[in-house]
Figure 1 (cartoon, rainbow, N blue to C red):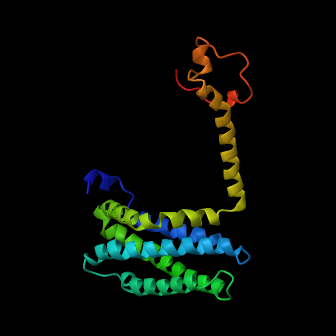
Figure 2 (cartoon, protein in one colour):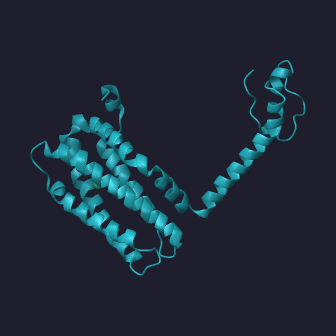
Length: 224
Ligand SMILES: [Fe+2]
């Protein structure tokens, strides 16, 4: 691996913290009266993020700690804890969001996750930052590479679940932005069709026309 890239990478410990934050942020959007479709999208996001996180820790982070010889207790119990998380993820995927046990199973999963996050962020990560200090960025780069491999085949699902979980206000804002962009494009299109590539400032000998039409005032001038 390119040594300079490895040095520029975020550290593995900060990546692990960011994964935890991502999962907790999705969980904090989940409310009991959330619509079934949004619940399912949030649960799909949480489950996939946890699966990838657990695999990355097991393949890259824990082995690096084990190489140091003295295996921390948190590492020793993390793998069975990950297996329990996988069991609950499997159960959630067998349920529909309006099934009786759906909310309770997610809450059980998140209790385990919160316990895992507390153990790692208060014990394991500070310990790793002391003992793996000169390898943290290199391991971060290895984790990024492996993460991209794991995410690649799931990219469609991740995008779809992210869109489904967005609050309605965000979707409306996005739709509004698309509409404004469409209006701007339509106002610019006749000039493109005429081959009138020059900006008003260029075609007027460096002087902008005195009264541009209403929409043109919002169109950035292309370079001369
Ligand atoms: Fe973790």
